[in-house]
Image (cartoon, rainbow, N blue to C red):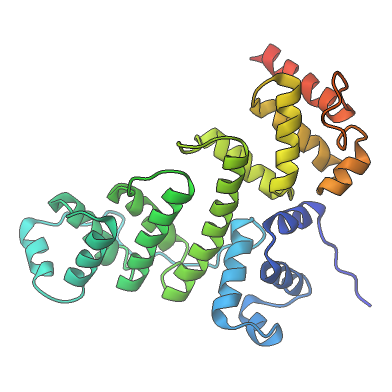
Amino acid sequence: MDLVSLPMNDLRKLIGAAAPDAALLYLFLKAGGTVDAAGDTLHMNQSRAQTAASALRQMGLLEAPEHAVLRPAEPPQYSENDLRSRLSGGDFPLLLGEVQRRLGRVLSTEEMRILLSMYDYLGLPVEVISTLVTYCIERSRARGVTRSPSIRTIEKEAYHWADNGIDTLEGATAYMQADLERQGRMGAIRRTLGIDGRALTATEARYLGSWLDMGFGEKEIALAYEKTVMNTGALKWPYLNSILKSWCSKNLLTVAQIESGDGRAARPNQVGAVGSFEREALSRMLQLDKEG
């Protein structure tokens, strides 16, 4: 029987993602299968297979497919006449109406030009742009932002989709589902850490993303947060990160494993006692302070 080697970092990411289809597809690919063949072999419909593939790409476990970007180096400068002509018929007026409805406001002339560029220059179909706008709105909400995303934010994401071949309704839907699931998990952790009423900073988001990639869930991060507050009196990101990195380095990824590996973990209310992981985290944090 041939053995398949599975890197520990990959396993941590799969465990942290809690996505069974993605894990199954990962094993299939490691055994020599392809994404195209996964549907029939694994009894997944196309939507499930694409969603699983998108989840693996989000985790960095699957490369984006080769996609040739066949467009001019610079987008065209649309004149007033160009815009009026495109608004007189075809699909663009329908797209504009749908985007304005979802954003809850009328777009300015400059914003219409940007939207036309997504449709005309990037070549994204109407249904893909519609999905893109929905994705950007839901992503903002998951991050704790109540206002609608700007057209510039949507445009930036549109370039990302176009450059990575996300140009079909099925591909767009799969990408949106995989990423919003991850954003939802980050939102739950944000609330666990007592961060409410504001969005995460870029640095905070990187911390949360790295913890999910390590394979930790909300309960494990909550335990590390409790230890952090007990020993420092507040949420200290480097300290919390050091605890989780210590657990990860010892392959302690669940609460049960952590409590077994650190005798202090099961007794967080014991006053004055500091476990080995906390001591290591505190040492690292103090070293960071000295270097800063």
